Image (cartoon, rainbow over all chains, first blue to last red; front, side, top):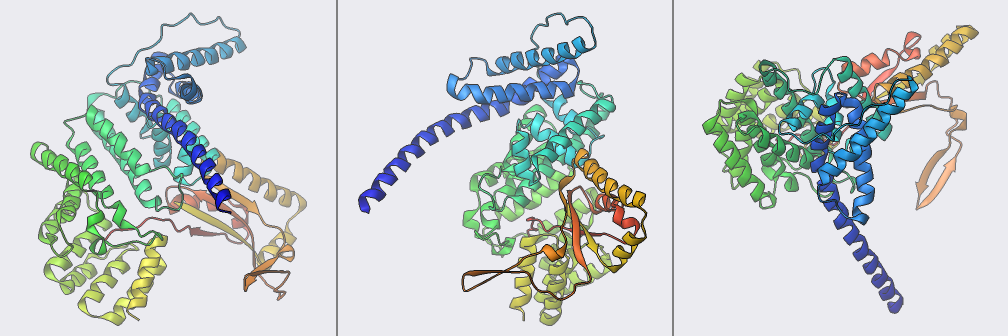
Length: 417
Length: 123
């Protein structure tokens, strides 16, 4: 029995080693492909003008590379290889279409090159205002993030076919909107960039809300959003809101190891084991936001990052500088008002002026949002009205759209029973 | 956000079905197929199926680790789930728009329910 087990372990070990080595090589190639993907797509789209067709051609080149490189080795200039293969594929498609229309064959084209502002143009095109947010997310993940349709489908928990359809519809809409592969005029860029930041934040939230360990092969969308925002910051080093967004993502993601228990249950900020927070990410986030607030006009992502920084800096929940957080929420309410900002301001107000003041503010605010009940329950519990708190927790548990939140609220209600 | 559009079969829907002409019944079925295609084309469809009659249902329970399948409970149920569309769209308004195109909504009504997700608010 012992011998058998050992032999089995030995074989499994060898298999695992060989598998690991190929996986290592694969991961290296994957990283390379995903870094090169936007450059390659941008070069091909700029050269041939048709974004949709270029995207198809680049996908095929990426698939060919993913198949060939792990075994045959990575070419000296991976981007040039991909551009060559994608261009050839694109020209073949054009030719077969042209043959169908009985037109002349295309003259041979010189291979397009990689250019500096390409990646920004690409990102702006993927986040085109004519597209719906889900379409912007899917297209950005594929065209800029270099993910396959299957990977995006797994990450978003929807069928691959649905993602494929979203992407092809998105490309069609871009074509119909008459968008070309050029940077928009200067007066439009500000507004378009706001859209890009929103899409990146959406991808980040999709990752931080969906990745609660139910699936091992689930792609870390929050990590992908951070990677893309880093790239955007490298392209636009003097955009304070891009810096703010990156800092916000880092400072929020740093708490992820402590945010959910292994069974997926939600751990509120006050109860989190702060020794499990990622100190490196916190240090980087704080340095980015400190620098941004000194150099650029203030914006809502910067204020949100500053709030996250105040939480992350506190060694214990009790040591949190709530007065500063309250001030920051007041500022945020001016910059980008909304029900969630008001609710968070009221939570901060309770910490500074006590739960009764906060309850009055909550009644006065007349917010129509399903999380009002959760906040009221929390404030009632803190003020000692336990029966009323229990009822509000139950109401909140019924109204939430989140499974971990429902479990958490039900547990709070049960604790007061 | 994912939403489930539920279609129930009940005495009112059966009465409506009885009153339909053959042409109307054909159109009803065709509109369901067309809607599935439109949802797929729009990139919102996750899954959609019509369910077989409840008389074909098998009820499954596990007691002391033993699986017990049965044809019951036999009590006459007036209403049962007849089919569903599971869609993924940005907000409730979009889901309502899709639900309004379900043929059954023209005769009785369909139900739109949000699906719980794994998000969580850190407070």
